[in-house]
Image 1 (cartoon, helix red, strand yellow):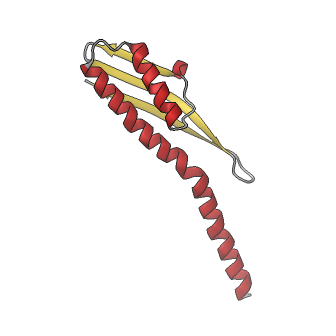
Image 2: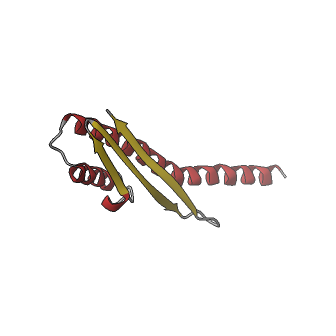
Length: 112
C-alpha cells in the first residue's frame, strides 16, 4: 500500500511539473512582451515623427521575437497628441493530455 501511495504521489508531482512546463512559458512571454510594448509606447510619445503604422510594425516585430501569435492587423494603435495607446488580443493554444487549453491575453499600454 505504501508503494502505491508513493507511485501515485510521484505521478501527481510529475503531472504538476509537466503542466507548469507547458503553461508557464506563455505567461512569461506575455509579461516580457507587455514590458516591450510599454517601452515602444513610451518611445513613441517622444518621437512625433513615428506614425501609427511604425508603432504597429514595431509591436508586431516584438511579438515575433517573443513567440506571440499577434499580427499587425490585431494590433490597434491610436495617437492623440503625445498620448499613445496600444492594444491587442491574442490566444495561445496549449495541448495538455486529455484537455487542450486556450489562454487568452490582452495587451494594453497607454502613455502620455
